[in-house]
Image 1 (tube, helix red, strand yellow):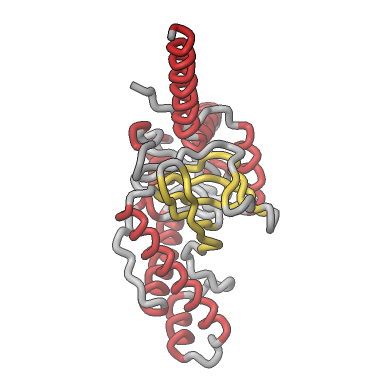
Image 2: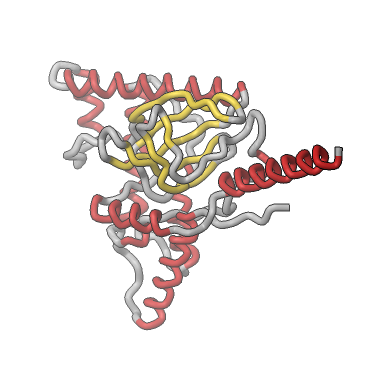
Length: 286
């Protein structure tokens, strides 16, 4: 059995939560500021993906420093995981920016799901660009925008943007990969944060989050013609502020835990060496 280790974001947030509790013990001030760096990392009820899922039709065994898409994307650290994929912080050498790389499992059914996801994300991007270019003359967009974004000066749709997509071939098969903008922890992480610190989410914050979620849903449904079929706290992500993002990346670079995928690769290499040694011994005995 392989013991599960915590993911980087989980450990970093726990450290932040411990610091916050210590501060609360020495001060009567309660947490009410969303701009605090408490929200630059996330937590999860389960620390890591199953080691046993690193197999044919399963996860791709990513290692830190690995290159993707002809060397364009460099793996920096693991961000998270899901039943269908793992997510990694990468450096885009072409743009000199950091993004989130989602690597799907190689099972054919997961590949099909990834193709569908890419098509929907492309439709979202196309629709967004078309409406932005013609928003003055598109009466439908004008009316929808007026009704949902009375204080949304930046014209934000509150929908994550796909940056790139490609296929990667590894030892476990073909993996579809999607590059996204880097986001922060999930709404579930935020809820857990308030729960663990024995505090209540401020009403203004709950209203703000609700409003932005509804704007995103209206945009997807009425403008893009898409229906979100899996809306839940863990699928709603918070956005990092620019001043938080740089520190977030630096914290991840310093993280010293070994991802499950790299432990799998180490075990595989060890097994290969042992097999080679046994073969050498047999040759010598023969």
